Image (cartoon, rainbow, N blue to C red; front, side, top):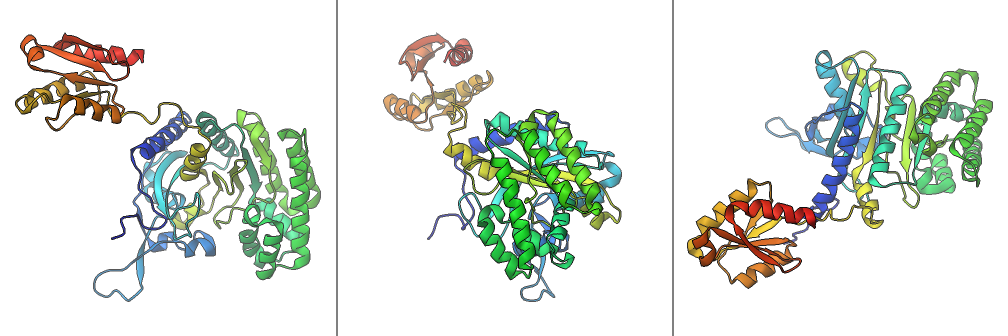
Length: 453
């Protein structure tokens, strides 16, 4: 029988879980410093909740759950696994709007599922780490989200990263300027979203396949190439590059896109006032394929990594699809799995994270002393120690060897002599030193020794 997990799914052994817990802990701590509150939603949603929110490609990747019971037709689905955390958030806001604050700020770290083709850094089950602000159309929201994401990356040890920024209205204006008919805008966005993966030639081929006029596609790709060259020019800092790109956009866009360009400028101005500003780059080629974005869009790029570490944007109409009235909303999602892969490959995890399972192991002297060993373990745990009890009455040397293999730094021994005098022998497996201490002091002795390590 094949004992491996399903393709695109993974098991997480203790070392993996510790790394994941570390990164999730950093993310949650940063977000809570910004006043965001935790939220959780079910793994399963009604299928009508999800369909039609992600564009044609996204809808194809939804894991559908077949309808059960009487009246169910073959192949009919009524439920689906959660595709992302944003649409469930929109449903929650619509359901509990009266109970939520005017400006609802939440973070959410939970798994999502996509019927995608597994590859390096891309899985069918993976965690998303979302942070969203609901209720305000102010560009202050975008600035805080990008700053928070930058703080997370800095805390995790990322120094070279780029916060790519664009605006859906600006991008629509570029499509207009390129002669792309409005009816083909969504097709063009889906193709442009793959620019970093397929390159200009690959995107040109896909644009052609989707019916986008070749002349318009060529003008778009030439413009994006010129912007990329400006961004890569040696000596150009973030502010000067962004100013140049904004000036190019100003010259190219029609007056009807002035509001979108003004919003983009405002985000650049506000983020520029924060530590994240030096990482910000206006990137007119950034598309974000999901169809619910209405304003600012952003992605996090890291040198040497295909794809992004996260992304998001403003989606002022999504909640209205559930609530029946427009509600401003903006958010960003960090890709936990990709961050873990990159941090592992680049040895970015702090030393000692692969922690020992326990601080001390209680040995078993003989079968008659098992109850006392369990009592000693309870006493040590009451002192705040992590304690493992060896489960069998093996030779003491064998028990020591097992503790060493588990990287447990201390073991305790209560033999006949120790029991008679109410003592405990505490042995360090690191130095080999051992000492007999009163049983009541054993916990404090081990705690003190751990502090000195």
